Structure formats: C-alpha cells, structure tokens
Length: 355
Image (cartoon, rainbow, N blue to C red; front, side, top):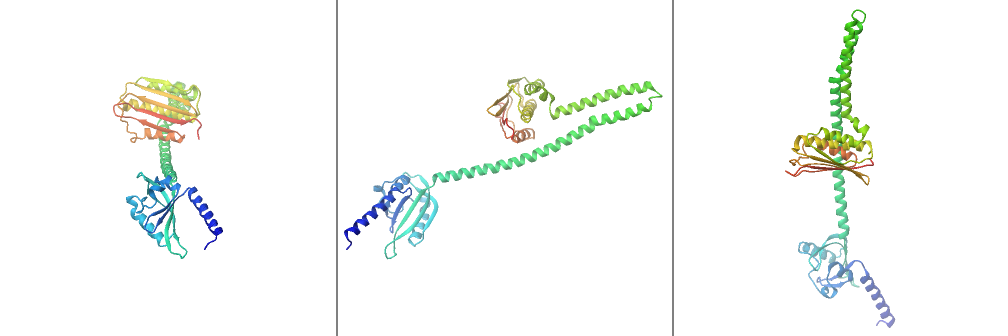
C-alpha cells in the first residue's frame, strides 16, 4: 500500500502533467482503443471548436472529414500497431464543418506491461505556414515568369538593335554615302579641268555644294531619328509639342514636368509618346488624343489616351511590344486598356532613378 508521501508526490506529479497539458500550444488528444476521446486540452478547443464537455467520450474520429476518413483510420491503426508519426501534414474538420490544416505527431501509449492502451495525438495548426508557403510558391512562380519575360525582352531588344543597325547602314549607303561618293568623283573631275576649263569647274563646284547640302540634310535626318535634337536642346515639353504639332488630330498636352529628367528616361518617354501617337493616327480613328506626363515620388507616369475605336491588340505587331521592352529595361511597367468602341488608354510608370 502506497504511503501518504507517495500519494502526495504522485498527485503533485499528476498536477504538473495536467498543467503542461493545459498550457500546451499543441492540441493534445488521447484516443482509446475504441476511438473514444479520453483527453482534450484547451488548445484542442481553440483549434477544433468543441469544448471538453462536448467531445470527451465521443468515438468514430469526429475530426476526420469525410474525404479523409480512410486516411484517419489508417493512421489510427498504424499507431495502435506501435508506429510513431511525426510532422504528418493533412486537414481535419472543426466543429462548424470548416477544415483546418494541421501537422500531426502521434505515438502509442503503453501500460506497465508494454501493451498499447491508447493513441496520443498532438495537432499543430499550420494554416499560417501553409499560407506563407503558398505565397512563397506564388512569388517564385511570378519571379520565374518575370525572368522569362526579361530574357524574351532582352532577345527582342537585341534583335531590334540589329535590325536598326542594318536599317541605318542601308540608309547611309543608299543616301548620304552615295552622295558623298558622287561628290568626290565630281571634285576630281573638276580638278582635272581646273586649268583648261575654269567655267566648267565653277559650275561643278556649285553642283558639289548642292550635293553636299543634300548629304548633310540626310545625315541630320538620320541623327534626329536616333535622338531628336529638340529633346536634347529644349527638353521634353518642346519635344512633345513637336510631336503634337505633327499629329493629324488635335493633341491636348495636359501636363509635362518642368524639370529635366535623366536622359534615358526622357528618351523613353519621348519614344513612348511618339509611338502611341503614331498608333492613334494609323489605327484609332480618333478625333482627339490627350498626353499627360507627371513626375512624383521618384516615378514618371506617362498617359496617352484617345477617343477612337479601341480594341487594340497588344499582342500583334512589334511597336507596342518594343515600347514595353524599352519601359521594362528601365525598371518600369506599361499597361494598355483598349475596350472596343471606347478608345485606348496607355499608361507607363518609369522610375526616375535608372537602375
């Protein structure tokens, strides 16, 4: 027969164990061999919604949702056979029928002879962890998509650069270069007649001057295509006003920053507006368009809208795709909204501090 001291020590030990069970952040549940619930701590009440009075003595694994019934029964049998489980992720059902993501740790409880007498299960609510994992997966997928877009964008930029270099080479060869070659031959012929026919030389020099003026004009036109002089000399507003003046429909310039922006940003804004207004002229069937450029909090916002037919196909052609590449190369973004019969609106956001 145990002594009073032994009884007191045992009670103290049982009280400490109960305190641990009650204060545990894990939902601790003990199932008997017949699946009846023998232990249900406060964390189990919080996670599953049943009070201790409601759940103690219930059988048939009440937290197992119908689609997880076979799984729950299998886990129960495995533990009663002596197997311990750790960090088994699944879902269980609350009192109100909703599901909660849980991680299960389970082990058999044995008596003094080693016989399994119950199944002790610890449930951890991993809803937040699952949400974080899902967000990480989403961000990783988004990053992969962005990297793929960036690789495609860079490939298109390289291809566009090669095409532009070939175009410039053709224009130089067929235009100014041919004029300069002709001019060189004319001057040599004039030198040969310098003593014998001064009048012919004088006429040849006049023609050479005209040819030289045409070559210089073609070179200036090519230079303007590379980077408009008005943008470098007078700034963004003057360049946009020049574009608006050339447009076949009235263009309202709602706003343009007074201060100069970094050169790559100004060039991107200029070509963005130039391409947008070209599309308005070619495809929109618009009676008017509006341009707005605002710089605020380190970002330049460019908006070009028209009252045309809408329905712009952003996947077709290289113009809009090229603009997207140019904007994204500066760390910005471009969106185009073009519902049928409701006009087209283009909006770009470009960081002022170029990466």
